[in-house]
Length: 129
Length: 420
Image (tube, rainbow over all chains, first blue to last red; front, side, top):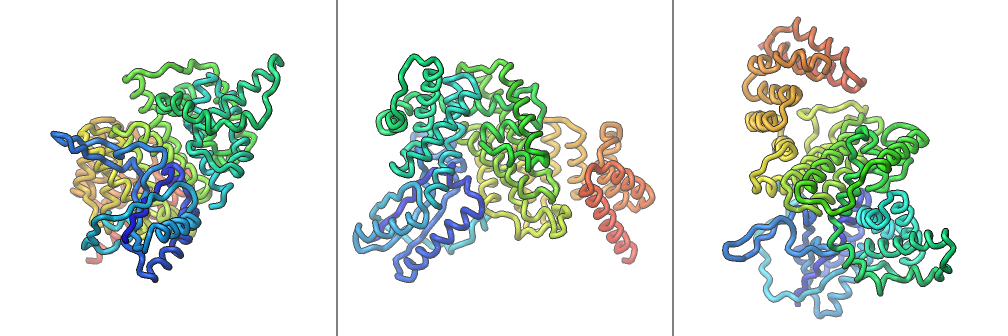
């Protein structure tokens, strides 16, 4: 079963990390990513810009464009993983391990209904700029 | 991150909202700050054991308010003190109430807290120091280090600034729409001051100053989060991100400033550039251009060019024309002329800056640009004169070195041309 692990945390905090703090968290996460990838369990992974960069299209008639995220919450959706796990227990285990590497916030674990891997190649952050 | 580091980060990010709300309750900055401090102390005792509350700001507001009220009672000795664990255990029961109390107010609370730091009577340096101390929560020591002054001097500067705003009328009622947008504009200008204080530093204090630029970005993001539909705040945030993205490339190993066209563009921070470009995109949709948006658009054209020679100077000149129209200033005309010299050659650029001689007669960059145009036109003797004037007017060794570097480069270019 494929699961999405939706990463929620306070973006004020995460985007206040110094480069060193950010690098340290990413280095710890990379260890977990490496293990998952080696076990062929890791699908697409992404990290989002802050919600201030977000724009929302309300599918009203006519559609309305709104500055900001769909929902204003205390903690924000900051990224997600797609992982291949046998069951919820295993997915929770992955979330726990990721959570130890990067404490604070929450992971929402959502089983996938449709998964299209897409055709994009991975690219370094911001390379499209 | 350790638990303690996490708590520290949570306290810092909750700070503007918490102090803003406490200021509204107590209408006195010192009381609000003390109440917040007390709440932080209790958080440090309480959170490691009980786990962090779901809404740290609401917890801090409630506990801080109770603690301060308790302090008032203690002074009047009328009421017996409730036991400590009762006060510090309010999170579960009272958090929803705190949220109800503050949800509607928090935008204006934070805006007010930022706004009192930009009181027009406060000189720019005091505004910056106050914002860093009150809103960002930097220590006096950290701020002193960034300003290259002693801790005692900075302490005094902040105390004086606080004294001034204590005497000034601070408006506590919720602002109307016009007043709110005036406050937003004043706060945006203050945030830009904080950024420039960091950005304009030489290499000698680069680390402490970079902290100021990062704080400014944090404040700009906060402001944008509060007022998501303001194109100028999108522009401001984009401008700061795009400029700060170049920080690693701005000084060489010896600490000398590196000109934009000589910078190693692989050192530019692509994450920040990406976010800056995304914000400009959003701002443009509003079709309400403003000075921050235009400056951000200019910075974006530099950021988008893979090599200096790919820079779209014609578009940059057009943007400077727009900026000139919105905020006429000889310095902007000078910048426009520099863009024009790249797009259309030095003769037109020189003609453009001739009328600025009176207004910018004491500005080193004016003579630097003039010298560059003259040299490109082959008028070497006049160019030399202008460069000498520029060096005489330079405020810092870095500025003088910048002009000397320009002389060397242009002299070499001119020789190369002559040899062809």
